[in-house]
Image (cartoon, rainbow, N blue to C red; front, side):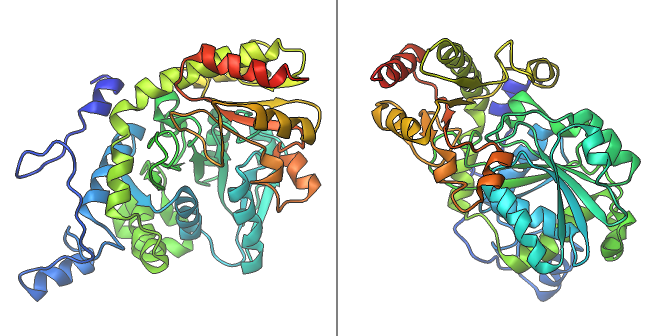
Length: 405
């Protein structure tokens, strides 16, 4: 089945013939006898007990996203950050280390930095090549984390090379694919072990709910870690069982059934939307690159972009829907944002509507100047999430905002 057909035809089983997943607004689920409930609680039978742990509405999204990513299991969480927290805390203990690229969304960077308070050491690589990661590996390294397309750096790591390095060293690779979605890239096929999305972005598409997901490729031997000793019988699904049974259950980062349903509604149109996002972003980037008031445009689809060739090798159907531009000063960036008419000034990406933000003064406001520079949040940088409107309107809007100088 072709991927686009799969997006639309990931069917549900409903006794009444519904083609959309019902919303099960239950906080718990009843059983006819105590023995059956005991089996479900003790992982000896499948079933639902409490919506903090699992819910039929959420399970439907989990099955679909696991299938789309080529994974075996998925855990849908209340947000992308909840997914990252759940995935990483399932692996980490006090005294552990982990490696991440420095090309990170601000919330992820701050989470990782704050793990130091709990006796966990993040090691941030300044580069995105396999050799940059290799020099940071120690016997305490529990995982490597990267983004398919850095936000807001828009740099593209050597995912294949890093995956081979991780496999050689028996270290799991966690890949955040939020900015690309499974339409452009499937990291598990490249050797990743866990894939994370903030489903609030492209998967949802309309900014009507928050969500996140962890997709387990079931392609790593988790028993190499001592803290997985109690899960050996689950073999390569040990991560999913431990994550749901410990961190997810105990910390409570579950998605509400209604949010799960709203995120699921975006799945059938994902390929159509991504095609338009990518097409519009490329045309807008080319337009802005020629404008005299723009100092620099960063978009991997531009032929002179340093990651253009890697993007062509790794991404299947476009170069993403996000670009950045530098305009010379924070004051000028603010004026341009304030002059735009069709672009919403807010902290999100992946909406059908076009969005802009000044990352340095918002998402990265709590970081030092040095951290902002390292993360790519320059003082004169504007991040643009390009929507699916008519691109001529988007170009005209930027033209009028820039031409006021």
